Image (cartoon, rainbow, N blue to C red; front, top):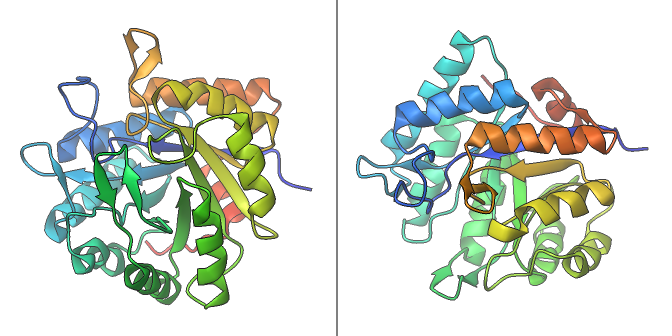
Length: 281
């Protein structure tokens, strides 16, 4: 029987949410670190991290990534808080070497693993080549980093099984369903009904919906017994129509929904146990 504990992941800023959309999105290292503290205090046990350059634009530059993550770790330690850090590996415009370089240096407990390419929002190619996925899977196993398999479209389920059979992914798999991206699967019950039976045995799963699908996907996930909910300004900037949210507010709402569904909110230690993580630092 699965644990009733519910993992809340906070995706703080992503690659695209800008200050012009909401003043609450953290883009500087100091803002990202401050929001990391705020979301853990609000109930998040996992923090999903992208970093930005001095102009607030997405970057995978290794030195910047290390500076931001080390600052996050320092601020969490100062506040006597514990969290699982989940670092992105996505960023199509950057070299595959750069997308991997920060992982063996920072040794996070988790990183994103996007098992396929797609026409993101019908505007650009979200590229994850077979060679990159093989390299990332190999690196994750070498460094004992848990891949978070982010699923945007149905065919990615078959890709996960393929890379598992080839030895690049190890079971149990953790699936992160990201629904409602234009070009991927919509954020509705039909999508989830298609995806869930295709998970490999013994897997765990979390769900998020983009924009207007954010709240419906949380409710769908709870109805289906998800292991986790992902929220944050990477995925959605509104608390309700016309009302901008902070990351902490989105986490607080997810915790309340989980508790109403009879779930206990997981601590970082709980998340490590549920996901089988290896703590390095």
